[in-house]
Length: 80
Length: 349
Image (cartoon, rainbow over all chains, first blue to last red; front, side, top):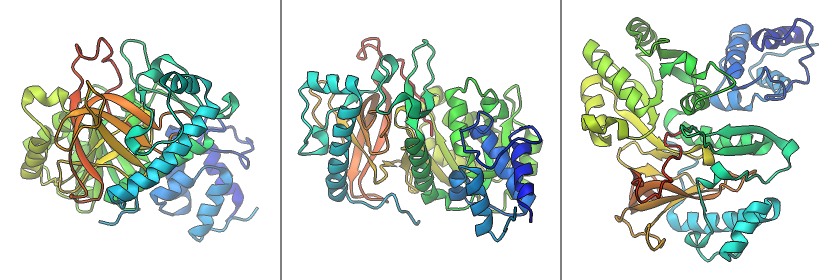
């Protein structure tokens, strides 16, 4: 799958503009990504990629890069 | 029940915590000048022979002083407690402290919830977390818990009325497998127990995690034992875990064991009950003020705090999990608190 799909999920869940650069995003590093938005983001990632994240992974999902790694652990490899 | 945070016997814990907390006292003394001045004024030394010798701060000090042990530009979150008088505690977290507190809270609750996120029923309204600028303590508590669930149902509508149809739908879909219920104690009783009983709903697969105290239920003569008994008898819900925690020690919760009636301390935390007159440690069975100790507060000096809550230790290394088991008995009566009894009361996570 394309990494762009994950970027789109992030932008939609965090209500960021269409071209917003998300690759460097960190949890609480942007005002849009607070604990409330985190819930929406997790749900959007689960729906978008057909995975179920454990509690540890939800807590560990602290950046765009970590999201990519966690998806990889679930067998979802994203290519840029 | 598998656990990796309720493992240490009291002698093991006291040795480990004494060393770790002694190091934290020294750390905060170096990093937080107001804390250092308080300890100097108390004549506190950096070494302690026992946990009970560690210098404590009154929890309400966080309402009147900015106590922080990291440079301002490293603070990523400032948590505030509820306060009706305008006085609120302000707790400063850096990235590491924020990550550690959520990880340790997760490990603590995984003991009773397991590693998977369960379908989750929140006995509150979605709006309680809706306003990002001003979370209430209720909102912050609910928000801290939502990570542990999935497919969340917020039971109450905008007017705080339980949505029975939505609850039925949730139970039809998820009620046959373990699901998580979270709420403040009096709300669980008022909005879930009474509704479930009236409508004959089956909550037998639920795992309830609740906090907030019994004061609002006292006029209905509902205490912990009665709460557990009637939920079990009338709704089938038997997996019930009360917890005690405060924003001033975020991430640390003292959790009721599966047998009910006692709160247990995770490996990184402990309680000491103190006689409110002599300040000496009270023996098992004797009520006093609760001091809470935790290794999690690294970015602010909240590692040893004297609360304004009364509690009693029931036993040591004789319960479902090792260590001390205790109960919270309520607030220190106002008169004795000399007008200082407006601190945050609800549990938050």
